[in-house]
Length: 87
Image (cartoon, helix red, strand yellow):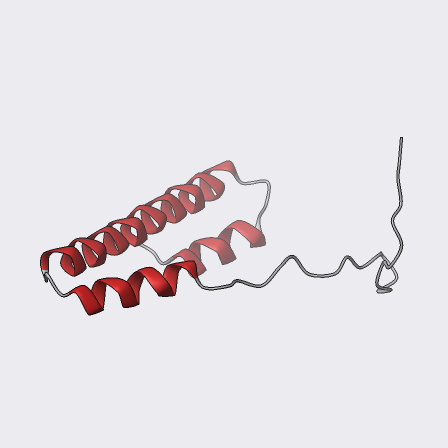
C-alpha cells in the first residue's frame, strides 16, 4: 500500500484522473481507520493497567484547553475585525 503522501501527490498532479482520486480516498480512509484503532488500543491499555494516575493523566490531556478558532483573514490578507452580516 502506498503512503498518503504519495497518493496525494499523484492525485494533485492529475486532478481529473478518477482512478488516482479513488486510490487517494482509499488510502486516507485506511490511514484514518488505523489511527482510530491505535487510539482505541491505547485507551484500552490505560484502562486495563488499573493505574488511576495514568488514567487521570490521560483524561486531563484530553480535556485541556484547546485553542479557539483563529482570526478570519480576507482575500487581501487583512484580519477581519468587525462583524459583517450578509443577508
